[in-house]
Image (cartoon, helix red, strand yellow):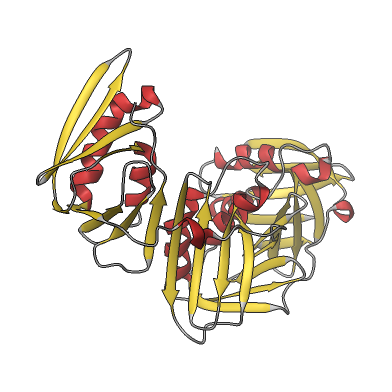
Length: 366
């Protein structure tokens, strides 16, 4: 194999595929990227055994062929090089030379025949929507995905579509984020849990926000392919909990506040709250929300935020980081915080109620 490729395009392909390569595995081939060159293109593929990311770019192919190179090593080398053409040449059965000007790097290669190919997918359901709509919806909820691997089904985002509404939901049992998109005719019935890692790779595909994207489900997998890039991933097995049960059916107290003001004050008060499990006390006091946090080592802080309340004289504590993340997807100026009492969960939603909301469990006031 011998090829010449612009460093920028080559690195973008390597970077995308490396997101799927496994760094914690005893299967050495999965720590590698498969690079195949033919017909004026190179295809770079990464795999961790459950997800495949493929990126194709145009280049000058003098000799076709396929090799496997260590993903992290290749990414580190190419990322440090300046822009300009690079040359990749096989020296023998297990060595490759990467060259740019006077810079030369020899790397050990593995047999590409041992690299697992992406499995079949699709045939059971599909969705078609704008890439920007998908990115926005995923960004609205992905922060609530759990990082606790023993709660496997919660390490992904639930996608459901009933012919009228696409709903994305994520929870780590301490908070729940939901985004609903009311749109008929964008697909068939869907109920699938997509891993967080796969969603991040799909979001990173080189597709414009105004372009349509087709997501296909089937055989326990999700697949997306567009613009010379493809992501195929196993779906998460198991039954996702009925998240609707944890959404409060009613609220008796409401705070209406400017989202940017609340976010700014919470960010500052977190300087103290970080040392106390991120606990921030929220107290309704007339037309103000009084924020308070304390640290045994640093002291304590207080902030006030103007608000409009309905029966809002209540004191409740939240994880300040959770509040910051709940405010992130809110695009309008206002946020409504709907509550009942200090020991029950609250709902954070945009004042214009655009289909997004986040439920946050309270913390002990002490």
